[in-house]
Length: 274
Image (cartoon, rainbow, N blue to C red; front, top):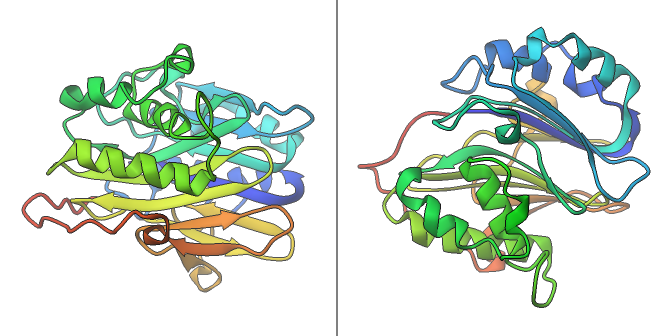
C-alpha cells in the first residue's frame, strides 16, 4: 500500500512535511510503520497550487529516497495546499503516468487503496468516466480511473455541479456496487486549490490508516504520523471524510450523512493489510 500526505493552510515550504520530520514521507518510502508494504519505492509524486488555477506536478518512477531533485524542490517550493505520495504498486506498471497525484483541470487527487479483481472491473469502472474527461486517462491504474469517474459524478463534465463530498460519495456507492464481494479500499485526498477533502472508506475490507493534525496555521493529513509524538495526531474514523475549507475549521463528517452507508464487512474476504 502507498503512503501520502496532504496539507492546507498558510504558505509553507513542502520540505516542512515531505522531507524534514523524523518520520517524513521520504522516510516512510523506506520504512513505513503502518503498512504491510514497508517499502514504497515504486515511484513518487508532488502536487501543489501556486499562482495558476491548475496545480503543478512533479512525478518520477524512481524511489523517493534516491531522487536528489526531490529535496531541492521541497526546499524551494512553497504552497498553501500541496500533496505528496510514495507508491507501492499493486499490479500496474511502474511508469510516470501511473504515479500519483493525478490532475484534471483544477482538481488534484491521490489514493491509497485498490479495487479487487481490477482486470475484470477495469472496463465497467472506466465506463464511469465521461467522454469529455476520458482524454485525461493517461495511465492504467484503478486510482486514476476512479478519480476521473468521480469527477464525472458531478465535479466536471456534463450536468449540474455537486458538492465534492456528495459527488465522491455518489461515486463510491457506484464503485462499491461494481466491486460486489471483492475488497475495495479508498483512502484518498481531493483538492481544487482552495479546499481539501480526505476520505477513509472501505468495503469488504479494513480501511487503510489515516491521521490528521490541525493547528491555527493549517491541517496536515497523513497515512501515518510524521513524528514519534502520536499524541498530537488524531485518527480519521473509518467511513468518514475530513473537510478543510479555506477560512473554516476542520470537520470530520460521516459519509452516511451523504447517503453512503457503511457497508457490511464480509469476514471471508477481509484482508488485514494496512
